[in-house]
Image (tube, rainbow, N blue to C red; front, side, top):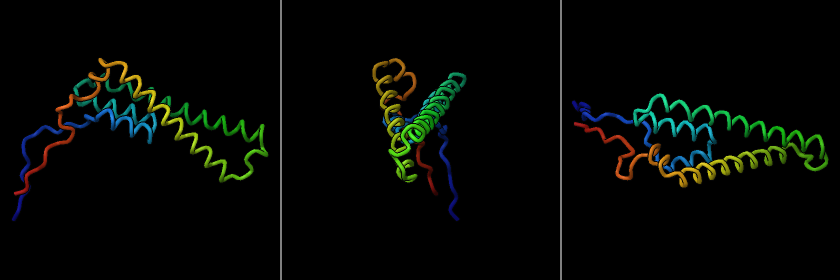
Length: 138
């Protein structure tokens, strides 16, 4: 009978790369970006500091949603003949939403590329393994 024998490696959660942060923040928004930065800080044993990036990420995510809602309300009240189809309204709203998420991701990437000390503080070194080692099956 085969038994799983685990090697004695500490499991490190987090340790996401800057490229992973950019892709997930472009898809998921500022809340996900704040969570990834928090995971990296948590994995580096900076537990109290890891709580800080989540709050601005959630606030910026809410601001983006409220901004799109106010733009949609402005269009529907001032220009009702501009987009008569509800499907077209939803397509424009989703497109604007993903455009704002991508813009936010580019801004985060620009800030992290300009502030090298912050980038070194948040992200792992190049030689660091991002994944936990494989488990031995015997």
